[in-house]
Length: 285
Image 1 (cartoon, rainbow, N blue to C red):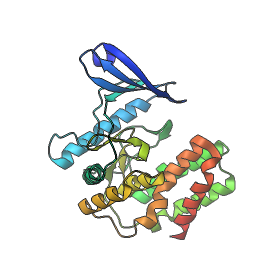
Image 2: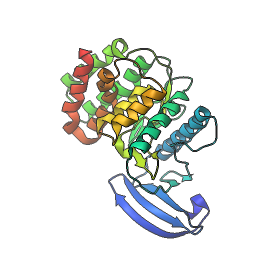
Image 3: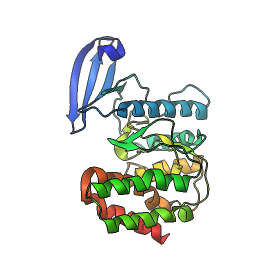
Image 4: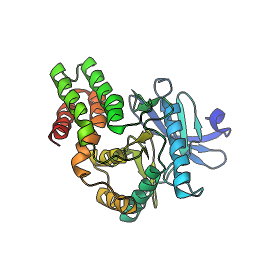
C-alpha cells in the first residue's frame, strides 16, 4: 500500500473475504481513508482492465458534462497486478433524490459514446475474460463477443448441455432482428447490477465495471436483473434526460442473456433455467 500511494498506512479494517477478493478499509497517515480490493489469486490483467474502465468512464463523464466535476465514477488511486485502491465512500440511504440524480448522470455518461463497440483493452467480468475486440454492428458484436463465448464456456464446464447450446445459438442468430432501432455506441459500465452501485450520502457511485462501448439498454437491463433500489426512479430520470426507444422493456431479456450466461459459467446450473428463459423470450420477440 505504501508503495502504491506513497503514504504510510496507520489502520486496516477487514470488510470481508470471498474466494476471489479480500476487501479492506485503510486509513493513511495523511488522514485519508481508502477502499482496497486485493485478489486472493493473481489473474493477469484483471485489475488493469478495471482501472482502465474506470478511467475511461471518468474521461467520458468529463466529455459529456463539459467540466471537471467527478460525476458518478470513482478515481483510481492505485493499481497493480493484485491490488486496486479507490476512495472510501461513506454510505448513505438509496433516496429518491439520489436515484434520480444517478439516472440523469448515467444517461449523460452513456451519451459520451465511442467510435466503435468494444474497448481498446482486454476485458474482464468478475474473473472471466471479456473479448473487447471492436466492431461496427451491435447485434453481431453482442452475439459474437458476449453471448456465444459464454455458451461455449458453460458447455465446456458441464453447466449447459449440447441441446441447451443449440437454443442459445438460435437466440443469438435472432438478435439482429429483435435488437430494436440502431443506436450509436454508448459508454457503458457493463456489469451494472445493484451490488456495483455504492449509495453515498447524496449520490450513487459506480464500482467494479466491465466497461466498454455497447448498447445503453444493457446497463438498464443489468440494473433490473437482481433488483436495484429505486429502479423506477432511476429509469424515469434517465428517460427524461435521454429518451429510450420504444419496446425497451420487451428487450430486457435480450440484454440479460450475457450476464445470465456469465452466472451459469461461474456458479453452475442453478442459473441455467433463468438463462434459458431469457433465450426463449428473445426467440419470442
